[in-house]
Length: 280
Image (cartoon, rainbow, N blue to C red; front, side, top):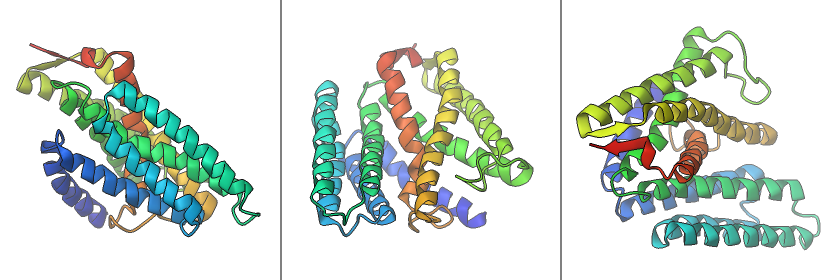
């Protein structure tokens, strides 16, 4: 537990400069690096790492997703990435056809699905940061706050009060009590975050929408975690990597962030982002 907490504190400290300068290119460099490491972990997990016809396009699509997120306007970016993901999928299916059985279609399909999921999950952070000059940073912070608070609260509540296993075949250590504690803690901390933005920075939240975002975001966060856990169980892997002591690799640490960042971005697009916070 101590190693996990220490790694978390150091990780947040390292992340702070990237948050401060998130409007500039350091954020892109960070997401490119993290996305590349995540792709490496996924390809290694599914046994596709040494299959160059698979691994090279995978790294390329992940790099494209991060770079174009800031270079293109949002609508054009979404169009380009949709076409890119479709072309990537067709290309990978073609590789499967001509692999002469050396590549299993199921392994390839999992690799393609997770590549799209992870690469867009990271790029959604950039899209949130750039969605609006006034509120982009707040939305960007929420994309980190919700999954990490949910994960931390679920972990501690599960350790001290967890008795009933949730889905042991997918994630043996997760408990119902931990899941509930994670969601409740997320709502409470997000409410506190809203109050800080309100009275400290003059950004009045739409509290109903914000708390609904936190409530559903807590479920989405744990869903993202379970997706990554399911893939690990299918391939008999304990952790995707060892980059973060006590946490595992990039996929282990950011698994819930991928789903939450995309979820918040969808909400912002549906509600045009602005009703979440209103300037005085």
